Length: 289
Image 1 (spheres, one colour):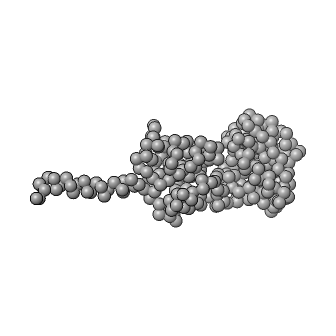
Image 2 (cartoon, one colour; image 1 turned 30 degrees about the vertical axis):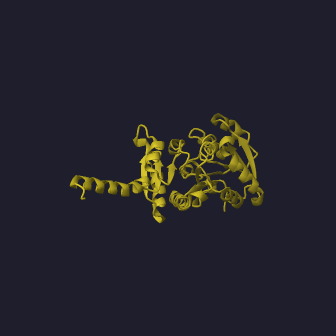
């Protein structure tokens, strides 16, 4: 017995929906959360899209008064979530099953206890690169200010390696930004150079100038991590290449998508960095390397 035309049409519609549902179950590989519109994030995205074909949806959180990331992930079911910036990482805090990869954030290791499915690329260049730079400058006593909550893990690694480069780190803890001036004063006559870390407590917009005032008075170079500090008086910087950072994030995500069970939720140093110097400062300080 033949079905009525309307019932046949309904059957065809149900079959089409059944075929479509698996596609909707994971419409794309990666949900990319950007904290805001930013030229630096655009560079990371350019690198992310350069070498791997990873389907994606991009959300810019600053465009929304509120975004329920947990609901979006539950409905869209992406294979992984990539966050750029601290706000984006905070927005992913409710995710427990979906792997989260963080870049362009200084707080990824601090979030590990609350987000065990987190991995990512640090905003800290490998300490060996800085230690080699101090060695080439023939500087032996290196002053470092740091917040132990944020950077203790990095200082431990740097101290383990320092002796190999003939360098001694003279460290001062700055658990509050107001501690910076006093701790810099304690380094007078004790150091040959200052090492600025990407530490939101030890280096703020207000305190950054104190490092360069110390440099001028004590005639010691400041080595930093961002190009903006070259114009303020840094002798050299080791800067992260954001395009390479995006490529590295794509490699991590590709591995997770290939075999989620093998994701070790670890953190890695950025692979692409650039050394830049300020010739005028180096000349003034009599440094030739």
